[in-house]
Length: 350
Ligand SMILES: Cc1ncc(COP(=O)(O)O)c(C=O)c1O
Image (cartoon, rainbow, N blue to C red):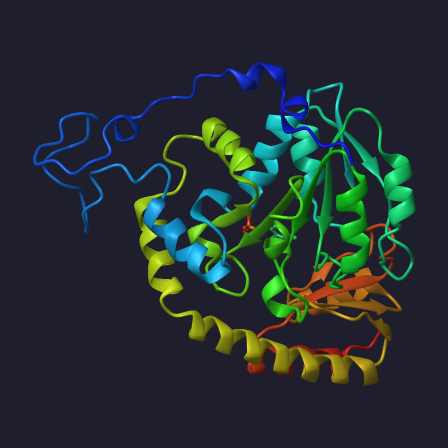
């Protein structure tokens, strides 16, 4: 593999002078801050939010680095993991010239971000059983391919992608390989974060939105080499993570055990739901899941979806998605919600 980061970055960004905020210019502790045009009197409403947040979130990254066993300099934080997805496409892909590879059926934001930025997409579908077709991926590479997006565990199919196949792609592709691990806390397989030192082209995405139960604070993480992270920091909005988000995340990180307990509970509920779906009418197949949802192939996807809506139960209709005909994606709920779903399912008459 012939990987050269500087040849992948859009040339005009190599020498871009980033915005220098007041907090970038002066980093020490002082008595009087008159450098950022903030309101010195305080904040309207509750709390003290009149000062801008740390633009590089040093404290938060330090706590994350301990849990993820990497260096703070290998971490980028964004407004959900959707921010790094978009940022990476903007940093590496020239509109109308470069392309990304994605493996449908997969998470929709790779397509949306590429489309928004006028970047071509090469689709290399997963197999019927949702495995990666690694030789097809390698064959599809062009001199203008900048990023391969691999979602593992994959949304909407739920399965983890074979580790050896991903490693082979990391070794053979001369471009960046993004592994989106939004659901990794629910899987038994380990994160690719501990492979960062082996692969300079690897970027791992994770999020606080799923296992941590913090979708509302919008906090996503990207892990990569220090060189890649420093380019991302250069391009991002100066204060992209609010003080509120940083505070809530810091408190959560001191309670990892609570996250682990919730994950165990959700996994137990997943087993219960899987068993019941395996016996349920109108169900053709329950796909293996390493995530906090099940993909269920039914006899009549859209009709069942509509009938469940009438009963005030909302699942995700994936029946129009490639390789997912008549499939519903069902998030694992609480014990009561799962029971309500199965009761409603038993009452279906279609
Ligand atoms: C695979 C995958 N990646 C990323 C995200 C986005 O996560 P965030 O809430 O961090 O933007 C989702 C959300 O559903 C997802 O399924």
